[in-house]
Length: 568
Image 1 (tube, rainbow, N blue to C red):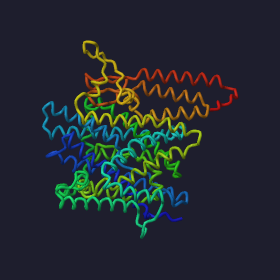
Image 2: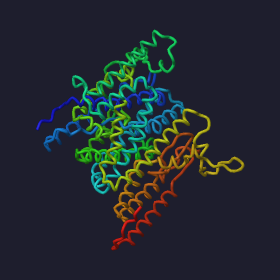
Image 3: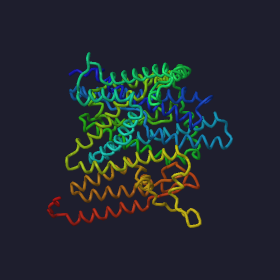
Image 4: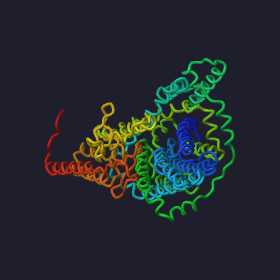
C-alpha cells in the first residue's frame, strides 16, 4: 500500500483550509488594531509577536495531524485517510478580543497608561487567557474518550451540523450574494466539481480553478472601473483596490518568533490580574475541548478513526505553544473533516496549509495576499464543506436518531441569530440590548427583571439564553432525545441532571449583559460591570430537574413492561 505525501486533490483541500485560516488572521489584524490599540507604534505587537506565534501553533498542529493521518493509513493499509483540519479557533478569537483584550486596553487607557503600554497589557493578558485555554484542552484530553463513549453520535454530530448551517454555510452564502460578480462563477465551478464530480481539462483541481477565475474576474473589473469613471456602484464595489497592494508592501519583512513565556509567568504571578478572566477562560477552554471531541467523532463517522487522547493533547499543545510564542488565540481541530475527505484531500493539504500560513505570518504577507486575492473567490469551497458536515450529521446516525440530530440544531441556530442581532445593535447604535431587555417601574426605575421583548416574533432573552454555552446545550438536548428514542429513560434523566448542573453553575443559559456586550456569568462570580443586566438561569436549572423527574418516573413505570410504541 502506498500513501503519497501529496495528491492532486490536496490542492483543493488546501484552498478550503487556507481560506478559513486566512480569514482568522485578517480578523486578528482588524480587531487587535481597532479595539486593542495594536496600531501605529504598537503594530509591532501584531507582526513581531502575534502572527509569528500563530505561525508556530498552526505549523505544529498541521504537521502533527498530517503525520497522524499517514500513520493511520500505514497501520490500516488504506490510501484514503484524510488528516484532521486544524487552525485558529474563531469563537475564542472573538471572545478573547471582546471580553479580555479590548476591556483591558480600555481600562488601562482610562487609568492613564500610554497607548503603547495599554496595548502591551492587553496583549499579555490575552496570552494568559490563551495558555489557560490550552491547559484545559490538554488536561481534558485524558478523560475525553470516556465522555465520547457515553455520548450518542447524534449528540456529537448535531452540534457540528448547527454550527455548519449558521456559522459556515449561512455566513459564506451571504458573502457570495454580497459580491455575486466575483463569487458566483467560483460557486459554479465548485458545484460542478463536487456535486457533478466532473473532471476539468488537464486534471486541474476544481478548487484551484474556482479561486483563479474569481481572482481574474475581480481584477478585470478593477481594470474596467479604472477606464470607466461612471461605472455603476454595483460594478465598482466588486473591484479590487490597487492602493491596498502598495500599502501592504510596507509590512513585508522577516519576523522570527520570540519566546514570551516569561511575560505570561509575570502576569500569572499576580492573580488579581487574571482571576476575573476565569469566567471567560474556563467556558472557552471547555467549549474548545468539546468541539474538538465532536470533530473527532465526525472523522470516525467518515471512516477515519483517530486516537482521541493524542488528537486532543496535540490540540492543547498547539494552543500552549501559541501563548508561549506571542499569539493570544487558541488553535483547534476544525469542523469539516468529512468535507475535506469528500474533496479527495489526504494528508498533503494539512502540511501545505501549515507551511504556507507560516510563511505568510513570518513575512508579514497576510495583508498582501488579501489585497491580491478576493476572499469571495475561495469561500464557495468552505460553503460546500459546511453542506457536507450538515448532511453527514443525518446520514451517519441511525434513521431513528435523525430527529435527535434535528433537536440539537436549535441552540446553534439561536447562537447564529444572536450573533447577527448583537452585531446589528453594535452597528446601529442608539438603544442597546440591555436597555430593551431591562424591566422598569412606572416611574422609569430599573427593576432588575427581564422584559419579554420580541424582535420580529423572536424573544430576545430566550435567544441570548439559548446561545450561552450552546455547544453544551446542543449536545445535552440531542443526547436526551436519542436516549428517549431508545427508551432509555434513566439515561435521559441523567443527561437532564447534567443540563441542570451546567445551567446552575453558569456554563449554559446564564449571562450578563452590559450595553450590547454579552458575557458568561458563573454562579459564584460577580458581574464584571456594576450596571450589567444579570441572569443566573436558576429557572432553567429547575426546568431541567423537572424533566429529569419525569424521565425517571417513566423509567420506573416502563421497567419490566413491554409497552408498544404509539403509532402516529
